[in-house]
Length: 232
Picture (tube, rainbow, N blue to C red):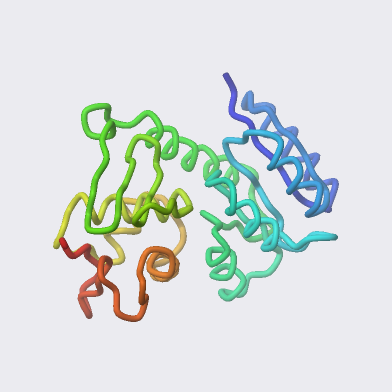
């Protein structure tokens, strides 16, 4: 069965081109032309990936991304006409998994989509021997099969990449991963972003799981080297 994609952009020619090209690859494509319509469709349907423009009427793409993250960890690729680093990092701050700057090559878009879907599909299928388990680490409890995190008795909503980073660190306690290592392992060697992506996700992760993010209990920094999970 083909993957289901939501394409969100107020430029109808861009939407038309993306839809045609993705349907040629046997993907099922839904379209939305403003932020409110996108949010409603994301709430009412299950997608494998969302392509989301930043500059949208009614709600911005960043607002849509932030609200989607309250109920779903569906992979989101931000589309932006702006090339400034701040826009790219801001998209990641709001929970996006990747970004593509306009004007883009449709072959690049499809390659990114397939790479993300391949990684997330692999995670959902998992390694039955390792995935079918809970990992408890202090107050943290990871459901590796269901890809859920609990801190104490409270479930904490993580994005797909935040969960991947935390799972990797917890499964390898006290092992220090450089930012480049994490980028290659979690995002893939073909990911075009840089190590600041890792820093953004670590910061967001700490804000969600640490009682005091500035004095972390779980995810630590080895200055000049990288990040590690400290066994508790």
